[in-house]
Structure formats: structure tokens, C-alpha cells
Length: 89
Image 1 (tube, rainbow, N blue to C red):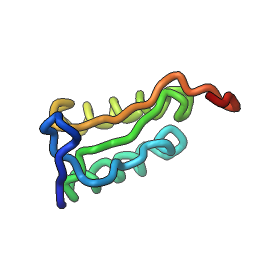
Image 2: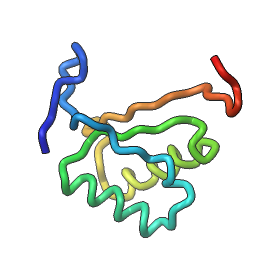
Image 3: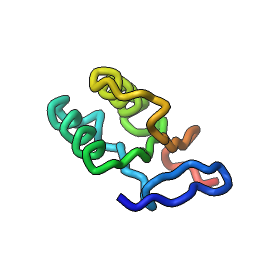
């Protein structure tokens, strides 16, 4: 998988983050397959937000990486927070 520098951070990431919005609604077996496929493809850049499943997506993702034995330091997790449904900024 091609990787690019993320700004001035020096981090190397795929040119696109893998969205995790639907993890909370997925069966755990499907969610685990999603993570394992991403890791096999050398994807390490994941997109989250506190609004995804009311925070459930982030909890599920945390459980998945723990159960898979993935080190948090090996992942880049992009997150957005304080999104209010229906509110325009």
C-alpha cells in the first residue's frame, strides 16, 4: 500500500483514512473481518468521530484492536469530536 507523509508530523499513512462509522451496528464477526482485512492490506489510518454510534464505534474499535493484539502505537486514528446533529457552525 502506498503511504504518504501526514503533514509535518512525519507519520506515514495511506492517502485515505478508512471510515469506521458503521462498526457499532455491525456484528462483531463482521467488524473483526473489517479490521483484519485492513491490516492485511497494510492500512493503518482509521477515521472516527464521537457521534458515530454515540461513541460505540470507538469502543468497538478499541475492543477489536485489543483482541487482535494490535498495538495502538501502530495505528493512526483520526477523530472528530463535539459534532452536534442538526447544528450548523
